[in-house]
Length: 508
Image (tube, rainbow, N blue to C red):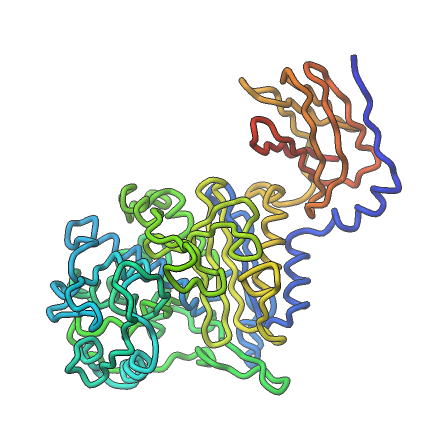
């Protein structure tokens, strides 16, 4: 017996304008609505990039449009890449995650409030070292960038150093308290130099970036194409004012570093925030971690090392750290873990994710991925003309939340090949254990319920709005009339055994 399920044409007339809005169109709207200087977005599905595009301007004065090849100084997202470099040295047996960092640096590093407690690489990578940013760090960083060669890091970390202040440390026992701090990764960069015998930027280029086919890096002076480098902006008195990377297409010569001693100050090339990279290249980093250490035949990490990065080291319990207004609630090694706390750290609803966020010089960036869904998002903007504001329903900025919502809504409809659009008819024969089998017909969809119970389902338009609700009786074949729908892609979703399932269906 067959039952005919019909839709009301008037309802679909209201849904069609929404259903026609693609991810590209939604992102264009976001770019305009938030008055962004420029932005680039890359999306991963099934461990491959299925969308990548730029909007607006990489360089306003130079009239250079943002594209998927635009290179940005990606700020703190750099830390997750720096952590990969360190974990390579860990898996080679050159360092233990729980050893005293003073043994590697060659001088003691101790919290003056807890002088007997070791500070370890694990603590640095997870921001539980008790080190904190402040005047001492800022002064040292300024000297690091302006002096050639830069001052050695022991001048900051030892109590006899010229830049040392006790305020560099919290009165918290190392390993027990989370405090996000850039200084942690400045030290990680110095440890990489000590352990590898290479300058930080050169080590990362040779061992992490080049194997992934990424020809940018932490040394701005070595970029192959300065014309692709985005200028970072803030809008002041109605004008876009450059804040960083305003090189007008020509990079100055690199300062003379011949007097630099490798391992003395890894902060010089900003392991904490100085990586220049494009959105699709950053997506390669996400895919590398989705693949537990390998990308396109290049094995950068062992599976054990990659899994260790994605192992929780700290979780907020209300009294054990500074969670930055609910943005940071859980942390691995170099990676933030989203906990999907309501009105807080949600990227895609009900989807746990790993990754990192960044902000500096007017830029905001995000790079997150889900092992469970094999998906990922990279979002970068080089300036927001209306200013960054945090909404009531998210710890991320409003523009970040808008991009996340657009991408997460559209993810089920994105494909690598062919591109998003009207597809030829697809048949979905039942696989062993498949709940529903769907055959696409010219006038509808033939749906067979292979389950022994009623299966409620809903049809989703391409923008995520609900286009219909159904109830499929057990063991029967149903014909769903789609003649009043616009041509395009839809998603039939249902839930069995507590898990949401879906099948893509096509109106052609």
